[in-house]
Each structure stands twice: as C-alpha cells, then as structure tokens.
Amino acid sequence: MAKIIRAKAAKKPSVPSVPGKTANKAAKAAASKPAKAASKPAAKKAPKPKPWTSAEVHEAFSRFRKANPEPKGELEHLNPYTLLVAVVLSAQATDAGVNRATRALFAVADTPEKMLALGEDTVRDYIKTIGLFRNKAKNVIALSEKLIAEFGSEVPRTRAEIESLPGAGRKTANVVLNMAFGEHTMAVDTHVFRLGNRTGMAPGNNVLEVELGLEKIIPSEFMLHAHHWLILHGRYICLARKPRCDVCLINDLCRWPEKTV
Ligand code: SF4
Image (cartoon, rainbow, N blue to C red; front, side, top):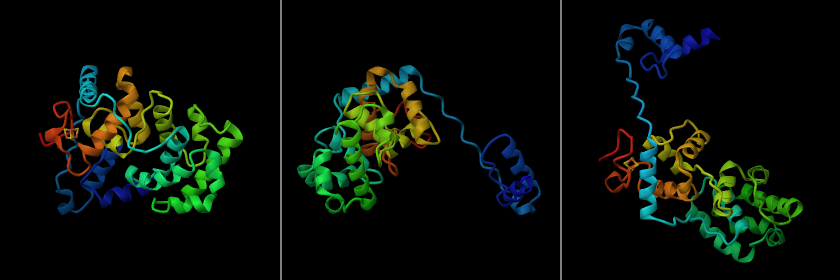
C-alpha cells in the first residue's frame, strides 16, 4: 500500500495539498525527482480565513432582512404535496425549468390521488422537459402511492418520514420542513454551498458540513428565511463565475480573497 502511495506522489511532486504526513510524502517524492521538476516552487497553502464572529453573522442577516423582509422561494407550488413534488423534480434542474413543466401538471394533479389517476406515462409527458424525467416520473408516482398508503395522503412532518419517500433526500426534507411547516432547517443547494465556502461563513467539504455549519452560526431569529436569503443572494449577486461584489450587501464582511471590492 505504502509503495503505491509513493509512486503516485512521485508523479506530482510540486504541490503537497495537505499538511502533515501527505505533505511529507510529497516532499520526499519531490526530492527524488529530476532537478527540473523538483525545482518548481511548491504551491503556497492559502491562509485560512478568519471565522465570522457572531456579531458579523448577525449584521449580515440583518442586512438581508432589511433588504427583503419576506423572501420567497421560486419553486411554484399550491400546497405541501405539490411543493414536495416540485422539489423532487428540481434535482439537477433549474426552478424556472421545473415551473414551466409543473404549472400544467399541478393544474390537473394537486393531490396524490389525482397524480396516481394520471399515471406514470402521462406524468412523464408533462415533465419531459426536465432532466432525468423518466426516473422522476416513476418517483412522483411511487411517492404518491406511499403518501396514500402510509401517511393518509398528507405530506409527513418529520425528516425521517420525508426522506423515506421515493426521490426525496435530505435537501428535499429541509425545503419541505422549512417552506411547508416553518421549521428552522437549512437546505443547501449549489448556491448555498458556494456562499458558505466563498464567504467563509460556513466552510465545508460537502453539503452536510455547510448545512450544519450554517445552522450553528445563524441566530434562530433569522433561520426561517435564512435559506431563501442565501439562495437568492447566490443566484442573483454572488454568481458562480462573476460575483457582483460591487453591489453585494455583505461585501465588507465576506472573506473571499478574490472578491472584487
Ligand atoms: S463580496 Fe463578492 S464574493 Fe463575497 S459574498 Fe459578496 S458577491 Fe460573493
């Protein structure tokens, strides 16, 4: 095993990516390489941004609240059931794309019973403009069957029960619990994940780390709307490629070294 690791490190000697053992191995491998490769300067590890203070987090969310006291999600729905279906359909799709398909679907099927009556083929036709539509149509029918059979046709109110539904995962549960039932959950989508890391507010290697980090630092008074403030900020201001730092409400608090202000 150790032999294999040394062999890999020897191929890329100049960038020890983590401190400690790995860096030592990389350094040793670098030393064993020809002079040309070994002479490249090692990449400098970016300094860790200073964690946000409680006062800074409070200030950021106070500004979000002042600018938009009642933020709304952009996924169209008529009731908790259609919200659940819309969130399941939104995996790897945009809210706008989902809305285009669900407007017509929800007009004829806003309950699990009506969805079942439509049948999988018809549901598939309604949502065929959404990515992964075949699998999603199956899940919509299967989750509707389960809601009828096990939950009296109602969307359940616990995380475990929502996550037990076909096509629903942690993010679905967080969105439904927050938007349908007013719970203080934090759904982490691509925008929230980027913001948590980029601003330094809640850095994490995966969505769960960012979710738990945000839940830990955001005061309860902001948690009902925090998910929407962050999504909207990521979608319209802190864009992935060209963040609009000049008009960003929290540009003085943001820790991103590449911010443009
Ligand atoms: S300052 Fe720029 S990078 Fe930081 S949150 Fe605002 S838009 Fe994003």
